[in-house]
Image (cartoon, rainbow, N blue to C red; front, side, top):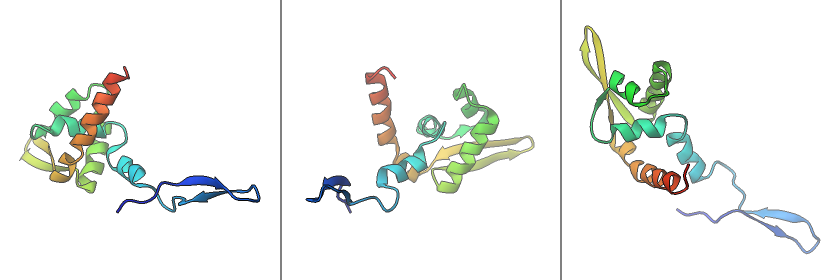
Amino acid sequence: MKTAKAHVEQRPDGKKVVINACSEPCPIERGMRIIGGKWKGSILWHLQDGPVRFNDLARQLGGASKKMVTQRLNEMEDIGLVKRKVLSTRPIAVAYEITEFGRSSLTVLEQLKDWAEENGL
């Protein structure tokens, strides 16, 4: 369901009022809460071609610490963007895989990547 965009109108008495004010976060904000945040988009991007072992993923995210990668993966697993699979217990080895829900964000991430490249960001 599409909602009308909020805007400001001036009443005849000169006072300004907001029409269709957001009473809760808008769909853009809700979406950004899911896929926004440091490293989340990059993690999804690196998982699009298949499962990736944790250490390999951490290496692909050059500037992220393993602690940060772990935190983001845990958040993303809780939301349902990725799933964790234990490959072995001794030594512990896990891989992460993008879910269908996570895969549904890739179009948006592709557009964001293109926009950033086109604008030299």
